[in-house]
Length: 60
Image (cartoon, rainbow, N blue to C red; front, side):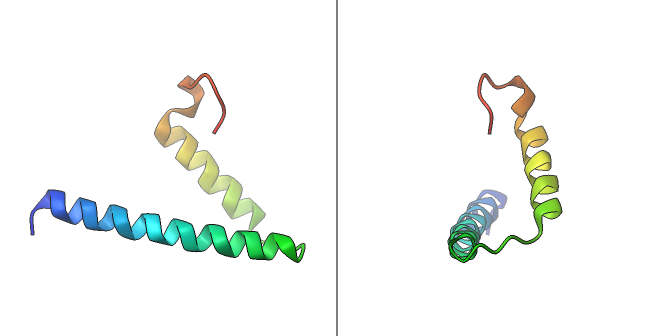
């Protein structure tokens, strides 16, 4: 398996995990549950820095 194939496979896995997490977050929000706020904010900040959010004309 080439490096590109590995990256593509990992990207697919992360995308699927993202869908699962999003669905779980929506279900928790429906019952008013809030959890891991600090971790979510921390990861959001990491993603923003990685993507150069401070350089975008819009917020992430």
